[in-house]
Amino acid sequence: MSQPQTSSRPLSPHLQVYKPQITSTLSILHRLTGLWLAVAAAVLVLWLYGLAFDASLFQALTGFFSGLFGKVLLFSWVLAFNYHLCNGIRHLFWDAGKGFELPKVYRSGYLVLAASLILSVLVWLGSL
Amino acid sequence: MKKEQMTPTPLVQAIGLGSAKAGFSHWWLQRLTAIFLIPLGLWFVFSLAGVPDYSAATIQAWLRSGLNAFWLGLFAVTALLHARLGIEVVVEDYVHTRWLEVLIKTLLSLAMASAIALAVFSILSLVRGA
Ligand code: HEM
Image 1 (cartoon, each protein chain N blue to C red):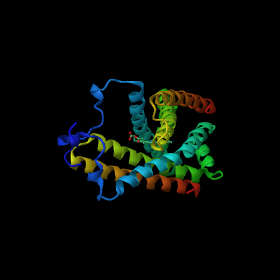
Image 2: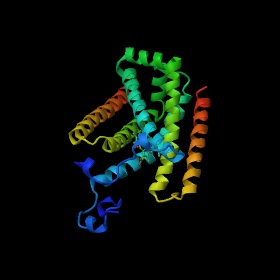
Image 3: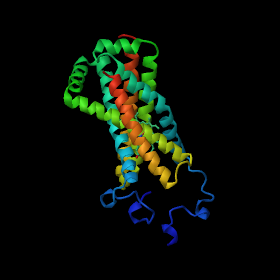
Image 4: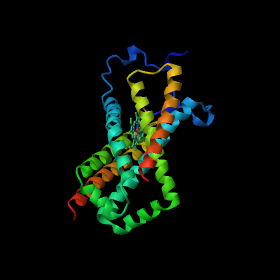
Protein backbone atom coordinates (compact mmCIF):
# COMPACT_ATOMS: atom_id res chain seq x y z
CA MET A 1 0.00 0.00 0.00
CA SER A 2 2.70 2.48 0.89
CA GLN A 3 4.86 2.07 -2.23
CA PRO A 4 2.63 0.91 -5.07
CA GLN A 5 4.91 2.38 -7.75
CA THR A 6 7.73 0.03 -6.93
CA SER A 7 5.56 -3.04 -6.51
CA SER A 8 5.03 -5.35 -9.46
CA ARG A 9 1.45 -6.09 -8.49
CA PRO A 10 -1.05 -5.24 -11.24
CA LEU A 11 -2.46 -1.69 -11.35
CA SER A 12 -5.81 -0.48 -12.67
CA PRO A 13 -5.63 -0.21 -16.49
CA HIS A 14 -4.01 2.99 -17.70
CA LEU A 15 -6.90 4.40 -19.67
CA GLN A 16 -4.69 6.51 -21.95
CA VAL A 17 -3.11 3.43 -23.49
CA TYR A 18 -5.95 0.95 -23.19
CA LYS A 19 -7.82 0.08 -26.40
CA PRO A 20 -11.52 0.88 -25.80
CA GLN A 21 -13.84 -2.08 -26.15
CA ILE A 22 -17.51 -2.36 -25.29
CA THR A 23 -16.58 -4.25 -22.12
CA SER A 24 -14.01 -1.72 -20.91
CA THR A 25 -16.20 1.22 -21.94
CA LEU A 26 -19.16 -0.05 -19.93
CA SER A 27 -16.84 -0.65 -17.00
CA ILE A 28 -15.42 2.87 -16.92
CA LEU A 29 -18.94 4.22 -17.47
CA HIS A 30 -19.98 2.58 -14.21
CA ARG A 31 -17.28 4.49 -12.41
CA LEU A 32 -18.03 7.79 -14.18
CA THR A 33 -21.78 7.52 -13.59
CA GLY A 34 -21.12 6.69 -9.92
CA LEU A 35 -19.06 9.84 -9.52
CA TRP A 36 -21.56 11.91 -11.46
CA LEU A 37 -24.37 10.60 -9.20
CA ALA A 38 -22.37 11.62 -6.15
CA VAL A 39 -22.51 15.18 -7.50
CA ALA A 40 -26.28 14.77 -7.91
CA ALA A 41 -26.55 13.58 -4.30
CA ALA A 42 -24.72 16.70 -3.11
CA VAL A 43 -27.11 18.89 -5.11
CA LEU A 44 -30.06 17.00 -3.61
CA VAL A 45 -28.80 17.78 -0.12
CA LEU A 46 -28.36 21.47 -0.98
CA TRP A 47 -31.86 21.53 -2.45
CA LEU A 48 -33.37 20.03 0.72
CA TYR A 49 -31.34 22.37 2.88
CA GLY A 50 -32.52 25.31 0.78
CA LEU A 51 -36.13 24.21 1.05
CA ALA A 52 -35.84 23.95 4.83
CA PHE A 53 -33.63 26.90 5.73
CA ASP A 54 -32.56 29.09 2.84
CA ALA A 55 -35.26 30.34 0.48
CA SER A 56 -32.86 32.23 -1.78
CA LEU A 57 -30.73 29.11 -2.31
CA PHE A 58 -33.90 27.15 -3.10
CA GLN A 59 -34.98 29.84 -5.58
CA ALA A 60 -31.58 29.83 -7.25
CA LEU A 61 -31.60 26.05 -7.65
CA THR A 62 -35.18 26.00 -8.93
CA GLY A 63 -34.35 28.72 -11.43
CA PHE A 64 -31.23 26.97 -12.64
CA PHE A 65 -32.85 23.56 -13.04
CA SER A 66 -35.88 24.86 -14.88
CA GLY A 67 -33.64 26.33 -17.57
CA LEU A 68 -32.56 24.28 -20.58
CA PHE A 69 -29.04 23.62 -19.29
CA GLY A 70 -30.43 22.60 -15.91
CA LYS A 71 -32.88 20.23 -17.55
CA VAL A 72 -30.13 18.65 -19.61
CA LEU A 73 -28.17 18.11 -16.38
CA LEU A 74 -31.20 16.57 -14.68
CA PHE A 75 -31.79 14.20 -17.56
CA SER A 76 -28.11 13.25 -17.61
CA TRP A 77 -28.52 12.29 -13.95
CA VAL A 78 -31.56 10.18 -14.77
CA LEU A 79 -29.60 8.43 -17.52
CA ALA A 80 -26.57 8.00 -15.26
CA PHE A 81 -28.72 6.62 -12.46
CA ASN A 82 -30.50 4.09 -14.65
CA TYR A 83 -27.26 2.94 -16.24
CA HIS A 84 -25.49 2.68 -12.89
CA LEU A 85 -28.44 0.82 -11.42
CA CYS A 86 -28.73 -1.74 -14.23
CA ASN A 87 -24.98 -2.22 -14.50
CA GLY A 88 -24.80 -2.37 -10.71
CA ILE A 89 -27.17 -5.34 -10.78
CA ARG A 90 -24.83 -6.90 -13.36
CA HIS A 91 -21.97 -6.30 -10.92
CA LEU A 92 -23.90 -7.99 -8.13
CA PHE A 93 -24.41 -11.07 -10.32
CA TRP A 94 -20.68 -11.14 -11.01
CA ASP A 95 -20.01 -10.82 -7.28
CA ALA A 96 -22.16 -13.91 -6.85
CA GLY A 97 -19.93 -15.62 -9.41
CA LYS A 98 -22.52 -15.68 -12.18
CA GLY A 99 -22.30 -14.57 -15.80
CA PHE A 100 -18.54 -14.49 -16.29
CA GLU A 101 -18.42 -16.35 -19.62
CA LEU A 102 -17.44 -13.89 -22.35
CA PRO A 103 -20.60 -14.27 -24.49
CA LYS A 104 -22.71 -13.69 -21.39
CA VAL A 105 -20.66 -10.63 -20.48
CA TYR A 106 -21.41 -9.15 -23.90
CA ARG A 107 -25.08 -10.09 -23.78
CA SER A 108 -25.65 -8.65 -20.30
CA GLY A 109 -23.76 -5.52 -21.37
CA TYR A 110 -26.15 -4.83 -24.26
CA LEU A 111 -29.09 -5.74 -22.04
CA VAL A 112 -27.95 -3.15 -19.47
CA LEU A 113 -27.68 -0.46 -22.16
CA ALA A 114 -31.15 -1.22 -23.52
CA ALA A 115 -32.74 -1.42 -20.07
CA SER A 116 -31.24 1.86 -18.92
CA LEU A 117 -32.45 3.66 -22.04
CA ILE A 118 -35.97 2.23 -21.65
CA LEU A 119 -36.09 3.14 -17.95
CA SER A 120 -34.94 6.68 -18.72
CA VAL A 121 -37.68 7.13 -21.34
CA LEU A 122 -40.20 5.89 -18.75
CA VAL A 123 -38.95 8.43 -16.19
CA TRP A 124 -39.15 11.15 -18.81
CA LEU A 125 -42.73 10.13 -19.71
CA GLY A 126 -43.59 10.06 -16.02
CA SER A 127 -42.41 13.64 -15.63
CA LEU A 128 -44.69 15.02 -18.37
CA MET B 1 6.30 -15.43 -14.69
CA LYS B 2 8.09 -14.28 -11.60
CA LYS B 3 6.38 -15.27 -8.43
CA GLU B 4 5.63 -11.75 -7.26
CA GLN B 5 4.00 -10.88 -10.59
CA MET B 6 1.27 -13.46 -10.27
CA THR B 7 -2.11 -11.87 -9.69
CA PRO B 8 -3.47 -14.13 -6.95
CA THR B 9 -1.55 -14.04 -3.73
CA PRO B 10 -0.04 -17.48 -3.26
CA LEU B 11 -1.85 -19.29 -0.51
CA VAL B 12 1.29 -19.72 1.58
CA GLN B 13 1.60 -15.96 1.85
CA ALA B 14 -2.01 -15.47 2.88
CA ILE B 15 -2.16 -18.20 5.49
CA GLY B 16 -1.93 -16.89 9.01
CA LEU B 17 -2.72 -13.30 8.13
CA GLY B 18 -6.30 -13.59 9.30
CA SER B 19 -9.34 -12.31 7.43
CA ALA B 20 -9.37 -9.12 5.40
CA LYS B 21 -11.42 -7.48 8.19
CA ALA B 22 -11.88 -3.79 7.27
CA GLY B 23 -11.47 -4.57 3.58
CA PHE B 24 -14.26 -7.08 3.74
CA SER B 25 -16.70 -4.89 5.60
CA HIS B 26 -16.05 -2.02 3.19
CA TRP B 27 -16.75 -4.28 0.23
CA TRP B 28 -19.78 -5.79 1.92
CA LEU B 29 -21.31 -2.45 2.95
CA GLN B 30 -20.94 -1.22 -0.60
CA ARG B 31 -22.89 -4.23 -1.93
CA LEU B 32 -25.49 -3.94 0.84
CA THR B 33 -26.11 -0.25 0.16
CA ALA B 34 -26.24 -1.05 -3.58
CA ILE B 35 -29.00 -3.59 -2.98
CA PHE B 36 -30.99 -1.15 -0.84
CA LEU B 37 -30.56 1.53 -3.47
CA ILE B 38 -32.29 -0.51 -6.18
CA PRO B 39 -35.84 -0.04 -4.80
CA LEU B 40 -35.09 3.21 -2.96
CA GLY B 41 -33.50 4.83 -5.99
CA LEU B 42 -36.24 3.76 -8.39
CA TRP B 43 -38.84 5.04 -5.95
CA PHE B 44 -36.98 8.36 -5.65
CA VAL B 45 -36.49 8.95 -9.36
CA PHE B 46 -40.05 8.04 -10.31
CA SER B 47 -41.61 9.97 -7.40
CA LEU B 48 -39.68 13.10 -8.13
CA ALA B 49 -40.43 12.85 -11.83
CA GLY B 50 -44.13 12.46 -11.01
CA VAL B 51 -44.50 15.52 -8.78
CA PRO B 52 -46.70 18.14 -10.53
CA ASP B 53 -44.20 20.99 -10.07
CA TYR B 54 -41.10 21.87 -8.07
CA SER B 55 -42.33 24.85 -6.05
CA ALA B 56 -41.55 24.92 -2.34
CA ALA B 57 -45.23 24.41 -1.46
CA THR B 58 -45.64 21.34 -3.67
CA ILE B 59 -42.45 19.68 -2.48
CA GLN B 60 -43.30 20.37 1.15
CA ALA B 61 -46.76 18.89 0.71
CA TRP B 62 -45.25 15.86 -1.01
CA LEU B 63 -42.77 15.41 1.86
CA ARG B 64 -45.54 15.57 4.46
CA SER B 65 -47.75 13.01 2.79
CA GLY B 66 -47.52 9.40 3.91
CA LEU B 67 -44.06 8.02 4.51
CA ASN B 68 -42.40 10.08 1.75
CA ALA B 69 -40.12 11.91 4.18
CA PHE B 70 -39.02 8.64 5.75
CA TRP B 71 -38.17 7.01 2.42
CA LEU B 72 -36.46 10.14 1.17
CA GLY B 73 -34.31 10.22 4.30
CA LEU B 74 -33.46 6.56 3.95
CA PHE B 75 -32.60 7.04 0.29
CA ALA B 76 -30.41 10.09 0.94
CA VAL B 77 -28.47 8.44 3.77
CA THR B 78 -27.97 5.17 1.87
CA ALA B 79 -26.93 6.94 -1.34
CA LEU B 80 -24.43 9.17 0.50
CA LEU B 81 -22.92 6.19 2.31
CA HIS B 82 -22.68 4.20 -0.91
CA ALA B 83 -21.15 7.18 -2.70
CA ARG B 84 -18.57 7.61 0.04
CA LEU B 85 -17.53 3.97 -0.10
CA GLY B 86 -17.39 4.12 -3.90
CA ILE B 87 -15.33 7.30 -4.08
CA GLU B 88 -12.90 5.81 -1.55
CA VAL B 89 -12.24 2.92 -3.92
CA VAL B 90 -11.65 5.33 -6.79
CA VAL B 91 -9.21 7.34 -4.66
CA GLU B 92 -7.36 4.16 -3.70
CA ASP B 93 -7.07 3.22 -7.37
CA TYR B 94 -5.69 6.51 -8.65
CA VAL B 95 -3.97 8.31 -5.79
CA HIS B 96 -0.64 6.66 -5.10
CA THR B 97 0.78 9.17 -2.64
CA ARG B 98 -0.02 7.94 0.82
CA TRP B 99 -0.42 11.26 2.65
CA LEU B 100 -2.59 12.64 -0.15
CA GLU B 101 -4.75 9.53 -0.10
CA VAL B 102 -5.27 9.84 3.65
CA LEU B 103 -6.00 13.56 3.34
CA ILE B 104 -8.59 13.08 0.58
CA LYS B 105 -10.28 10.25 2.47
CA THR B 106 -10.42 12.30 5.64
CA LEU B 107 -11.99 15.26 3.84
CA LEU B 108 -14.37 12.87 2.10
CA SER B 109 -15.50 11.38 5.42
CA LEU B 110 -16.07 14.84 6.86
CA ALA B 111 -17.98 15.98 3.79
CA MET B 112 -20.17 12.89 3.72
CA ALA B 113 -20.91 12.97 7.44
CA SER B 114 -21.90 16.63 7.11
CA ALA B 115 -24.04 15.90 4.08
CA ILE B 116 -25.85 13.08 5.89
CA ALA B 117 -26.46 15.24 8.94
CA LEU B 118 -27.66 18.15 6.79
CA ALA B 119 -30.03 15.96 4.79
CA VAL B 120 -31.60 14.35 7.86
CA PHE B 121 -31.84 17.65 9.72
CA SER B 122 -33.46 19.39 6.73
CA ILE B 123 -35.99 16.61 6.14
CA LEU B 124 -36.92 16.47 9.83
CA SER B 125 -37.45 20.19 10.05
CA LEU B 126 -39.50 20.11 6.83
CA VAL B 127 -41.92 17.46 8.13
CA ARG B 128 -42.27 19.27 11.43
CA GLY B 129 -43.08 22.43 9.48
CA ALA B 130 -40.73 24.81 11.21
C1 HEM C 1 -28.15 6.50 -6.01
C2 HEM C 1 -26.98 6.94 -6.06
C3 HEM C 1 -25.72 6.17 -6.30
C4 HEM C 1 -24.50 6.76 -6.21
C5 HEM C 1 -24.22 8.21 -5.84
C6 HEM C 1 -23.51 5.74 -6.51
C7 HEM C 1 -22.15 5.96 -6.53
C8 HEM C 1 -21.19 5.00 -6.76
C9 HEM C 1 -19.78 5.24 -6.83
C10 HEM C 1 -19.08 6.59 -6.71
C11 HEM C 1 -19.17 4.05 -7.05
C12 HEM C 1 -17.67 3.78 -7.21
C13 HEM C 1 -17.35 3.46 -8.64
C14 HEM C 1 -16.14 2.58 -8.81
O1 HEM C 1 -15.60 2.04 -7.83
O2 HEM C 1 -15.73 2.42 -9.94
C15 HEM C 1 -20.19 3.04 -7.07
C16 HEM C 1 -19.95 1.69 -7.23
C17 HEM C 1 -20.93 0.72 -7.25
N1 HEM C 1 -22.30 0.95 -7.32
FE1 HEM C 1 -23.21 2.73 -7.04
N2 HEM C 1 -24.13 4.53 -6.78
C18 HEM C 1 -25.50 4.75 -6.65
C19 HEM C 1 -26.48 3.80 -6.83
C20 HEM C 1 -26.26 2.45 -7.07
C21 HEM C 1 -27.31 1.49 -7.29
C22 HEM C 1 -28.82 1.75 -7.32
C23 HEM C 1 -26.72 0.30 -7.47
C24 HEM C 1 -27.52 -0.94 -7.74
C25 HEM C 1 -27.14 -2.12 -7.85
C26 HEM C 1 -25.26 0.49 -7.37
C27 HEM C 1 -24.28 -0.48 -7.46
C28 HEM C 1 -22.93 -0.29 -7.39
C29 HEM C 1 -21.93 -1.35 -7.37
C30 HEM C 1 -22.17 -2.85 -7.42
C31 HEM C 1 -20.67 -0.71 -7.27
C32 HEM C 1 -19.29 -1.38 -7.20
C33 HEM C 1 -18.69 -1.48 -8.54
C34 HEM C 1 -17.30 -2.05 -8.52
O3 HEM C 1 -17.08 -3.08 -7.87
O4 HEM C 1 -16.43 -1.48 -9.18
N3 HEM C 1 -25.02 1.83 -7.14
N4 HEM C 1 -21.42 3.64 -6.91
